[in-house]
Image 1 (cartoon, rainbow, N blue to C red):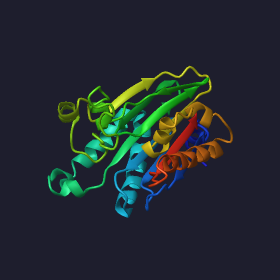
Image 2 (image 1 turned 60 degrees about the vertical axis):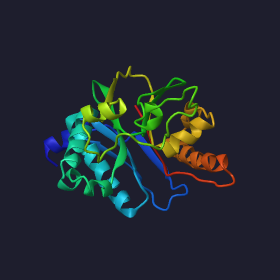
Image 3 (image 1 turned 135 degrees about the horizontal axis):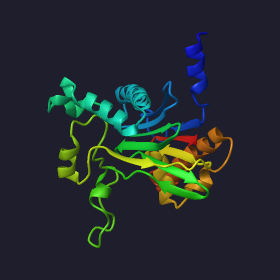
Length: 264
């Protein structure tokens, strides 16, 4: 093995993540995750929640997740990677056609990038979320792109807008200015998160994984502060499905539930 290859492999951080999925009551699993590590040690964690319930959406979402993970890790920045992939899909001829793009796949996307000596960056479009779990505290890093954010609960409409009405997603052609004008937020948002070197966990989750827990007032930190990491995460998504179905026993339903948990 050449010296450069040995040095590159040595520089890459160890595997520090686990993923878990539950199908729920869908017929196809259209959520997916991807992780990619660049030669300089920058690592991208990606979660996509495909819009729809078809094999076409599933296959597109898997490809898009891998593409996003590579783009973000190689750029060492979550926003740069997401914008590159977002703009690439938006520029395709089928999506530029007003009629055809209505039938093209899309997905809520969230990506986080860690790199040696640099703060973590997170970027998203849609309602998949990122959380930081540290010393008993759960910090939400993302703000959903959906109608519930656009129309928050009020005295007249205590429920607010629909959480199912997604207002930005990977596969859309709307740029920041257009999305800001139509829904009051840009197409892509980002946050930079300094890490102090103390143990913490990054959680990426689809709405089918986090929402049932939140609606049932479960403590996300308590649910995920356990080892082995993979087993704790599988229990987390399985419980999300069980909780969602139990909430409406006369007509039980649970979405795809997918999560990624990384020790940082």
